[in-house]
Length: 139
Image (cartoon, rainbow, N blue to C red; front, side, top):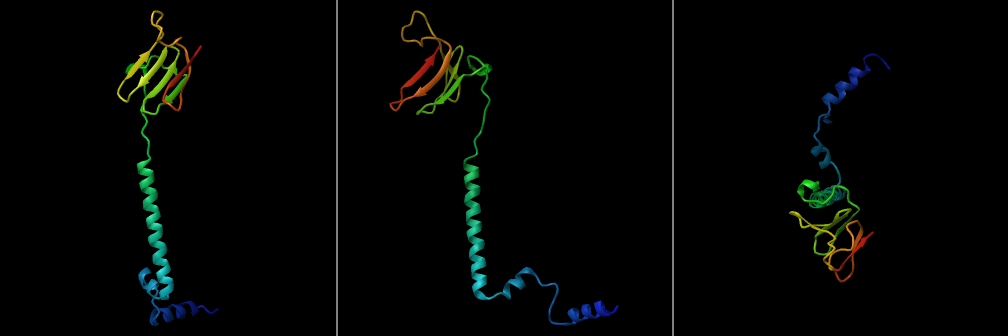
């Protein structure tokens, strides 16, 4: 390769009809019509799928809040958690069961004089049956 061949090649491209600085859209116009159609279709399908994915991520972004004793929880150590069919959250602790309605807590404890109260304050588990009844496991 001679020392001047690089310069000659540059002059050829500079003086020819082939432009080195074509924009992306100018190159796209050189493609056959069938390829242009499939590229456009692929672009819009991809755009549609990405917008759907973005909507899914935004809609399903959960928010978490810390619930503490200062807000009415009977104890900071929780043994079990249940969200019932009505949307209430139930937290079982060593000091009873706590019902959270989204605003505050109501604590249910064992009362020796009340036969309808829970049998013990130490709650091990809480489950809900098909009829919506809560079953509370104590020690």
